Length: 591
Figure 1 (cartoon, rainbow, N blue to C red):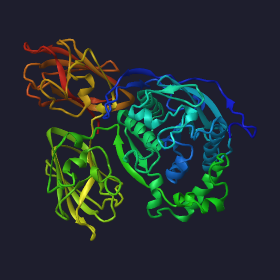
Figure 2 (cartoon, rainbow, N blue to C red):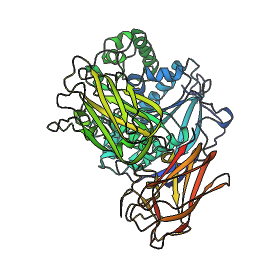
Figure 3 (cartoon, rainbow, N blue to C red):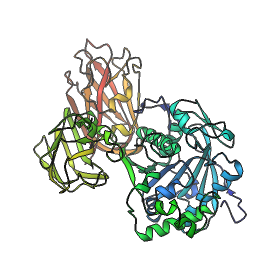
Figure 4 (tube, rainbow, N blue to C red):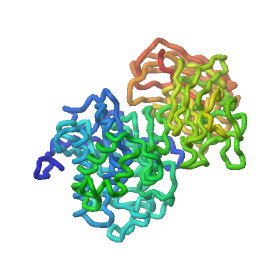
């Protein structure tokens, strides 16, 4: 409960975190978003005087209801707290079920009691206010463990998706699908549009700086038997994750469907999970209240299980998405084509068979190859096997265009990530070859294949002297990974009538240690940079010679330095230049 036994919260000085605003990249879902910037924001939600260092990492959980994290993200949630990670959980709905304030206000005390139990400290919390994307929110942090915080957005429970009459039949599903333009909180204090909901989650990520995101199932679809609020919470978290620039991983957790999966938790984890739930249940009259009652219900089934449905990397450039693909075979009849290996969704059968690449009876010797139009510097490959229990890769090999090779061990049979790291390689192609499979394999394949570039450009905010919004040639296209650009449109930055004096600036939330950049001019043969300068935030400058006019990269090296921003200013252009710009601006970390 809040505060002491009386239920009163103790309030300290309210130093609200207010986030500025600036244009940002569009998410894959094509939401038009105004992204909250946090270059000067506090690194966590706790008071500045007692801000946890979070040296063991930060986790941000996004749940729909007040028991979702306990039922479906635990024991992972407990392990994060035990490991000393900073943990913040955001609950989107009030979990009111149309029952009114008496029910939802008491239910909010459930996670407070449960998290105090998990943290093994007293159930005493301090409240403070932060402003995220224009919304004033109350953050509750444990007094004895301030690195654990909870936020309640209090949107109405959507029930089956149609909402409840008591809350105007509003629901997150209706908001996400465009049936309603806004959803109003049950306490009448605020409202959210689809875009502002994603912006709020993005602002929380930008402020809190998590390296791990956990949420509900973003792979499944409405009507698949899961709660519509679960899916919407996950869709919103996933949309925000795609805009969040700090390197991180997001995982989506299965909810009701775990009842159909084998038990996969130890008895000790099961027992502790039920103990956590019973601490919560003291404040939720609609769930089992005793151990015996829980053991005789569906809560016992859920306590034995924890499954994820998909995971993705974020904040780093996955250049697999911009590659040309080839494969030994593919199942075109079922739609399980090679392109599904880079569709940005790490999922497959039995969750969603349409999101995986499957060979036609392929086993050992099957392969998939990525080819890039221009060199990419990569140092990490992540592979997700098909998540069914039969078709599993027991070994493989990565071969690169530079002649090198890296052995790959068995991939997790449940579709979880297999990360393969190596010294940076600048290559134009990469092939993954299956060298062994499990005896039950009939059609080998992959749920997802990701190749991560070393450039830190995608983590930066990008500003420019001008940009051509009419043609989509935005400034941020300089860090989109497409180093060849697209003549006349698309994958490049172009100014509006800009020549000498035009500039593009990259700014990072965290300092970056770098020692070279690679610049790619617009490849149209007319608009050419023939001279420029790089200026760093320490005041130093580096001269940049003419960029190749054929779209090839120009590497500019300099002494190792730690920076938070740099500006490329064009000092000279060709006589044919009308709209100067860049196809790509790769900023490479020092080794």
